[in-house]
Image 1 (spheres, rainbow, N blue to C red):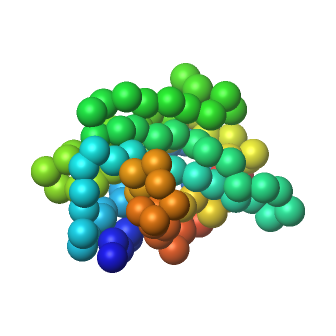
Image 2: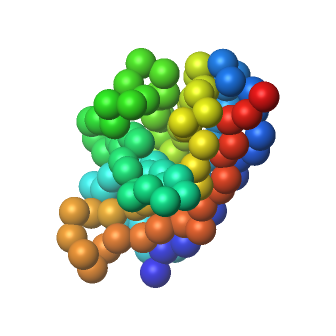
Length: 117
């Protein structure tokens, strides 16, 4: 089993910045991919950014150029650096760790990010 714990959410004004962290513990197996997904009320969950343990990343179109994902493999931690935040970024952000198979796919509980003046 794997446990994922997110932190760093909160309330921020439009144009502001915020950094989320997610630390994994338990049966961590590499290679793997860690990433962030978000879900706003009434909307489907969408991929925000993900990064493999080998350093390959990809981003959702809506955050490209504003968000940056990074990770510390030694600490089993992934970060999401969010800049120029917009009200439409308001959502619950959840961390995911998987190995591209359904039997190794874990989620954190999520952290709320609210962008509002």
